[in-house]
Image (cartoon, rainbow, N blue to C red):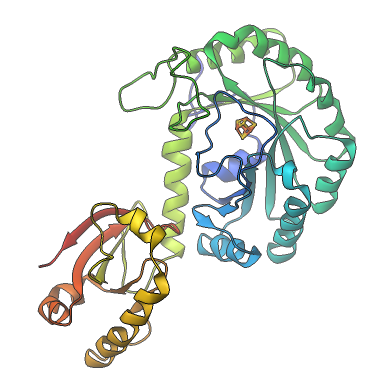
Length: 379
Ligand code: SF4
């Protein structure tokens, strides 16, 4: 019986270096582009991102490189995982960001990248290597072997090489074929428990694949195939590190650790930070842009400058009236509102209501989108 590690995944040797940072929540996820040469039926990328040349650092939309630095600093990141789409679709930008990350945070800042084999050439891989990439991971297409032979290319460079394999229950034969081909060409394989996604590309449900539990997106039979393949690698005596990455690790441990980290490093002096990194704070909203039905949609569509212009005099007034320092109050331009302590919003709620602000106590994620978990209006 294979035993799980402390992160609820399974490994035969040491975890791949990139994964060691990820499980501790120390890596910024850099979604460099939504463009991709493939259309996999298990693709997890959302409809808002797939096929579009958009960039995100964790949940933060990136307009220029300074946004990446800010997000990395917010969580005191020790490295980055570059994903997409396929980062090789925007190779120059990807290399530019790798170089800049290394310049800003130093050589030790560990960077790994996921790509399909489609766009890998000796030239494109050299560009990535020269930019400073530490670890590269390839996705195989089980239904089309055209590019499989390219897996010999990355060993021309001195970096860690791995292969990412989604555990598709009916693709046992093809997955074994890939393992037979790559076992002496790469250092590790990551076997990924398959998860359903709420997007147009993912066809897993249409293909009859069911989730294993009501409140889980993990596909039935996927983890079982992972155990079989771990045994297969052992029986074949392949000198290959195998990591079976579970849905529980990705959604539970990795994300939870990153959020905890962001909570510790990215909070206001007046926030209450709980053990999971969630922030509880006082918030003052304007009528027309307060949490409720369709709040997220309204936020996206809102002319934020218009709300900031309305909020600024109220912000100055509150600051003066309660003799607050810069540490005690914050004008949030992302979600136009004023932030203060939970204590102050409770104590002075009548005053805030009197100047047409809607006081609330909110608990939310410390991430760039500040997703609300709970909003308690005090009226
Ligand atoms: S799973 Fe990866 S390679 Fe496949 S379509 Fe989605 S982004 Fe592209």
